[in-house]
Amino acid sequence: MPAPKDLDPSASPRALLGAELRHAREKAGLSQEALGGPLFVSSSFIGQLEAGIRRMHLEYARQFDKILGTDGFFTRNCVAAAESKYPDHFAEAAEAEAIATTIREYAPLLIPGLLQTEAYARAVFRAYQPTATESVIDDLTIPRLERARLLDDPTTPLLWVVLDEAVLRRKVGGPGVMAEALAHVATLGCQHRIIVQVLPFDAGGHAVMGGALKLMAFADAPPLAYFEGPGTGLLEDDPATVTRHELAYDLLGASALSPQQSLALIESVAEDYAHEDQP
Image 1: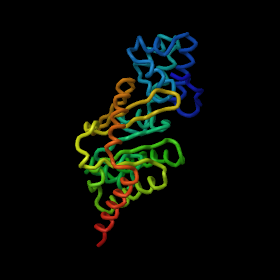
Image 2 (image 1 turned 135 degrees about the vertical axis):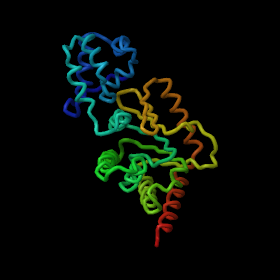
Image 3 (image 1 turned 90 degrees about the horizontal axis):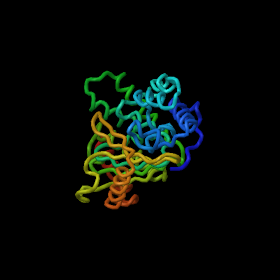
Image 4 (image 1 turned 180 degrees about the vertical axis):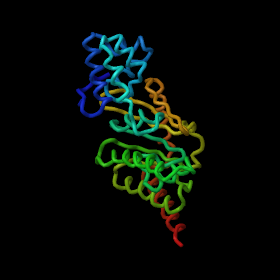
């Protein structure tokens, strides 16, 4: 694994904890593998903690204080580092996403959060919580739109998305919302800010039929895979597991339409929704 780069401790509590963990580990003369052994976690997991990618849970913080002799520093500070505006099952993935250099995502049913328009996001959250107040929907929608600001940078992260054709056909929010949402995705593709492919229905079975998949790569830490379901999420750092899903994603891209064909289909479906929305 490459040597971790110096972190800016002012960036976030998690970055501060990561920098301090690396300092304390090196001062104790321990490798990442040696530190992770008593906690039954991998050296990759320790590397991701030090890089500020993974959340330091309280049980790990207590063990670090004990092993490294840090007098309760990690125990005292891990609670603040764990605070997030995202749901618990997604918090780690969202914060890892924010510092990833490459994101590859397969979306089986919904436009990915980074590509959603406000109207589409609101329709998604309203479907999840049909009796919620508007303020609750606001609280869910605003962080999702803030995540999309990652794409304000013209080059980083590299975002490659494979959309199942079901994403295009399911009328989330109605034809007007869908027309705007798909036009937004197409615009980002035409501007070469993202790579987008569509996996058509007639592609048949494929290697990622189990659900949504997000793969994230980083400059100075091992890659991660994230699997998400309704109200649940799993962030996976096991190298063999991540490698297996990277191959599955490559096979998925090979089965999908080309980026040019995909953009043409997305634009065509968006136009159909726009015409349907006319009085």
